Image (cartoon, rainbow, N blue to C red; front, top):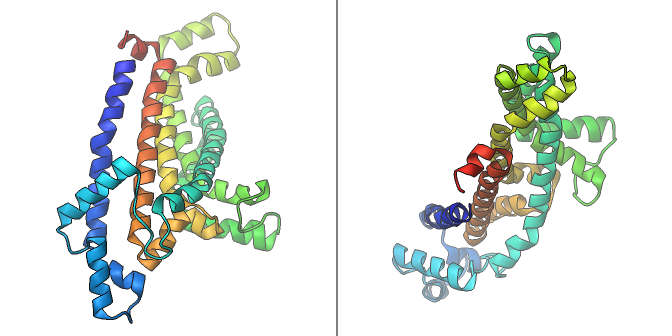
Amino acid sequence: MIRYIVRRVLLLIPVLLGVSFIVFSLIHFTPGDPAMIILGESAPPEALEALRLEMGLNDPFLVQYGRYVFNVVTKLDFGRSYVTRRLVFNEIIGQFPNTVKLAALAVMVAISIGIPAGVIAATHQNKWIDNVTMFFSLLGVSMPIFWQGILLILIFSLSLQWLPSSGFNTWQQMILPSLTLGSGSAAIIARMTRSQMLEVYRQDYVRTARSKGLKERVVVLRHALKNALIPIVTIIGLQFGFLLGGAVLTESIFGIPGLGRLIVNSIRTKDMMIIQGGVLLIALTFSLINLFVDVLYAYLDPRIRSQYK
């Protein structure tokens, strides 16, 4: 297992290099002059050229990329914001905790709704409760985040006035963003749970457990659900990574000061360094979550653990 974890960690290096190269390339070839963004459109040409030389913007593309990677690896220096002139690392780290908190709450919402819904649908296959559950799961997958967020604000904030429509400091302010971001993942988890439970139900050990006279609740929770968890854990891990990216829209809708909203504002102001640093941080977090999920497999399935003994 240790060798496996080390190998996976080493594989993160080319993944992050690839992500950084793609993001750096897109930003480099995007129209816009960083020197003009910093000094303004009315700045004299001499000042613009001097700033370009100081920032190394006239160097070849690969030289600029190599210098950026070297600074990130050796100094953890992601550059400075074009707009605020503050360090990018400090900017994104200051906003990232709210994004992680939002994604974590959304995952909790998705798990608490998705797994029970999938189990109930599987235990009542082809009955009305199964059809209703799958209908709402299809609805949850189909609804765009921005439309669902606005709809929840209209219903619970403006019409009923039960919950606030912005902020992220109190538990009341966290409910609507978490529901908005987590409902789509809950629908995906519900469908996956139902599918896996139905597959496990056909296994011999489940029939054996029933033949022993065990209660149906014990058969479902201890025997069926436990063995159906591995692909469900995969989906949950992937959804957490996707939710970090989905937080961009949710944070903008509910006015949450997180990394997603920071990236959106940076796109509007063409603050390329913030965009680049934020995307790299999300990519790193996504990769680490996938690594954690893979390691968790070994503790859920003894067959996988035995391969590394």
